[in-house]
Image 1 (tube, rainbow, N blue to C red):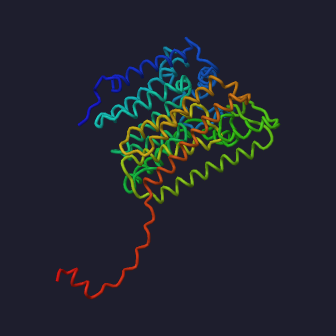
Image 2: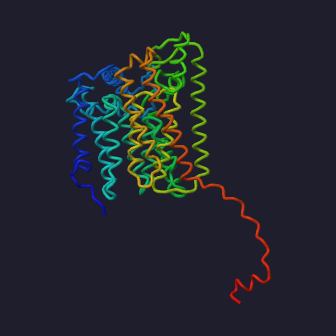
Image 3: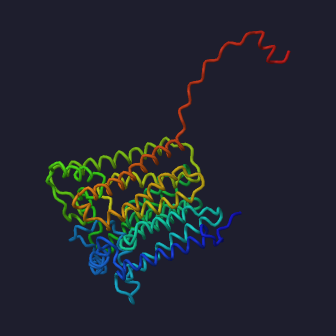
Length: 418
């Protein structure tokens, strides 16, 4: 049996050293000991999350604020800094984000203990480093930790995996996608039933204990086309040909406002619906399931969901890196190239936000190039993932068996050895 106790550069010791050094640097940036270039990324924690804290503590959701677009379970990570009263809110949040990061690392290392494969560990260590301080300045790393634990629990405890996915869906809807590749039979039934039970129980609990638990639905519905999304590329290009729309803060993000924006937003929703329909069709047709299929399916679903979204905020890449890390840890995965493309997209995400975000919002050539490369990498990763997942799991239609030719009487004696 392989072990992962070696200390060579590419082994556990090297991974832990790189993790510790890179995370120390991230903390230096989020605590603003050294300022990270470009936009300030800690605004959400210091102003928005901290502003919601007293409202949530009083037993209500901030229904007055259009930036509140999260399921009711989001109250858990946003209230969690109160468990560290010796730190101010922002500092406590950053410490908890570091802890969530460490939980993912520990889960991946534990999973690699029997196989000796550290590919997933390195994807997480390197991917988070490429994304920069945004990882600790949003609560998405905590959601990703729950999704990673759910995926890794599939192999032995499908009911636990489902319950974790249901809990994750109450934090941010996307973790429910990790169940799409559940193996047929008992694992499929147990995972989805436990997810449904967890969601129902948590919804009932939040509705009973807190006011305005479903207010996020209206604000999420009214969002438009965010400047970093795939659909936004239409307007980035159109501005160079006379389109006179504007970029403004709208529903919590920088969005395009102007003629035809609603059409592009509707088209993006249509693409997301088509993507989900394809995934359901794949689910119905898939017959060959390996130990890697749940991971490959989850990564593919998340790529499709993220790439076609009206909003591709930088923190969304944390989700992809987490699920990609689980995918890379599996023997037999067919999605190694999409994993590498996602890591490259993470680097370009950091360049377009926060480093050169003013170029993105102004739509100049440099901003258009950075955003075009990032979104192009995501599109390529999505298409390749869909094709490879289908090829690996859906059997080809067998050709019709040729009609049997009549056998001559003399041939029978030859065949029988007479």
